[in-house]
Image (tube, rainbow, N blue to C red; front, side, top):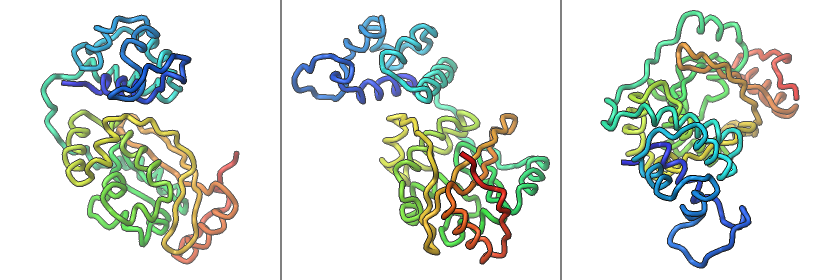
Length: 282
């Protein structure tokens, strides 16, 4: 049985072309990317060891090996952080499948009070599984007509992968899908991750399953929204981690002046009065 760590190393090896590392092409191959022997040589490990790691038969590589693999694969900062995270969770993985269980949806009163202080700003409390746990009225106004909050227990990940309206709302749907799939790995617990994937993958299909297997590390930029009312909005996301709750407080700010004007008009029509001081400063 494979492991998240082994899957990630294999996916990154498949994504690197030999020419990028100054290695000669060796004719047609059944699979893309680097050969195991090429990566093993660059990382200073044996092919046998790399095979065991990719196949999940070795679950506890040393920090030196992890760093050597990161260097050999030319991972960027975010990819290195994900490699270290997968190393940590793989070392503690039990061979048996964790008992699936949904993540708690409760939000502490102090967090709700903090959220209220952000009104009339656009903000929500979520977790890495995509559950929308609380939000300001301005967030509801921003997402009105999109279908995101229609469910009794709204979930952004399920919305992105299963609701056709999501592809119209997010012009950069592939980037948003990469983000949501990647964040599942960072969920509150192994049991919550198992519950989310077991309930989501049958509905989302390869669009989600393939991303989970590839471990695409997203490079998060401004969020583009093609709002049903007409304007296209560019929003930055400022995220406050709540580690004791395994939740995040996310504030959405206009990334440019046209978005600031369009957002102000949209919220005004919805009866919200946005404060002009809530804007991104580069």
